[in-house]
Image (cartoon, rainbow, N blue to C red):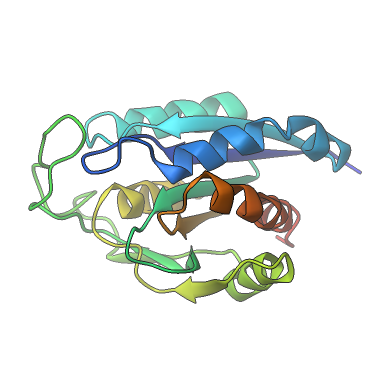
Length: 195
């Protein structure tokens, strides 16, 4: 079996969330690196900045350094009650919400002249089923929002990555611990899906 490279990247703190569940989950998955290796996966993890100016170069560097076959992006959607597997990303960003550096984007388009929308190549329903099989409520979603979660997802798909974005509810540590097997299952299923 040839080894696969997987990048798991979760967002860090941002206004209103001093501790981001996505960062906590990413760091917890990083501690499972040996388990991923036993499955033939070289796991790379990163915490993404919640900053419009820093996000694109950070993603570009991560992709160049890790050459991932699959990318699992994690963020928080505080109003959602279940794990949400996003199915598409739009070329849009809100001009109404500042990032962690207190900056607004300079345009409502992420990339001028690029396609309006990208659908993820990931089998979203199958990934949601993998999470549910681990006892975690999960569903697919068609709206990754208009903040940096959607931006990271759009840029990843634009750079032709096999990527999926998973929104976590605003879970606390105990809930995240219960959800980790589901996230690991989703990550492995994404890595080994058919091209």
